Image (cartoon, rainbow, N blue to C red; front, side, top):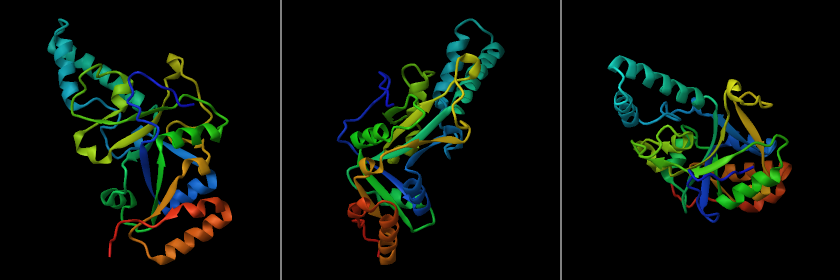
Length: 251
């Protein structure tokens, strides 16, 4: 399922990655044993899946150099940008963060106003193995890459791989590793998958392979530990031993 591509920056298999989620999303993962891939158009960053502003400006200049008038060049630029935007709606994402240890800032960001949540600690290798062992009934190409943070793509700025692995420098604190799936218009040979692309897809994974450790939110009381153990005891007792208290003190 995981497919390599020369345009991608794939980290070493031992690279430690994290996913911070609220209790509701973790319970969904436990019950479904599925990772959820969100449609890129639903991401909070409105520039997600689009070329940086500097590249958009440079695109206009390069088109004008082809001998077109300013009006013709602007029209051609808008056509190309619209094509890129259309492909954004046909792209699905599942995001992780690369870090050796917990991040106080990411706990705050991904839990929002809630205190209840967990962080899954794993590695790139375990993530890819978990997907393979999940043996999902619908097999399609899944790509994996580190995200680059820049306001200008130097090479092949309209390359779909380069676009989806680039984010604005404002987000470099995320240190993101992302899984992504490309779909294509039916008119260009794309297939209709057994799920609604505009919503996203669920992908079966082996949770025992995926989860190395389960870190408890540093903002919850002792009751949370007991509650989580009770839940795991019913759905997947083998994960209980993987529970860890956060090393962050928020007293």
